[in-house]
Image 1 (cartoon, rainbow, N blue to C red):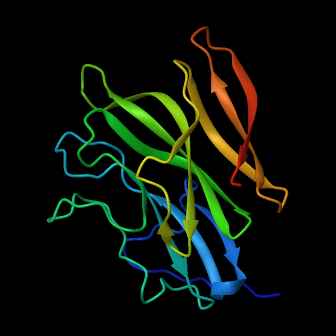
Image 2: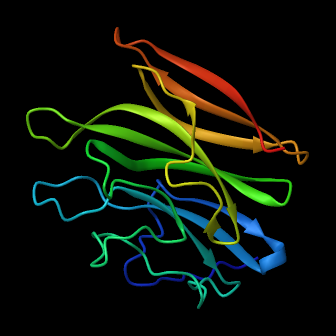
Length: 189
């Protein structure tokens, strides 16, 4: 066994917020990647997006480039699972997980509300889910809610039974500081 480091400008491979799964039919891997955290200048993009990585560890030629800033055309891209573009107060960012479910991959990710005195504080994290075929998303940006309560839902993990059902396990932080481990099932049929 040997490990060969790979890198591409604009992709921070060691970031713990990324998730990856094998895609044998595409001869590579699917990588889920967040954009940047909110900043005072308003230039970063709250986003969760997917890319196809080749067996050589490079971004696939037909895979879109990494989005960190608001695009000039201000349009959603085919590989975006969720975005803050045109959605005041929402910020998809942070942890994600991906698993195979039937003919598609399913991705779960965190989406926050932003605000506070700085207008960039993240709060009320929710867990969202969306289907992916190759590096293209199949659902509307924002996917569907897996868990959306007043508490912070964070750190999603995902496991598949290979029959179209998945288990999403996540952490729930309550207002009193207590933490719970919660789970929800997702069906793709």
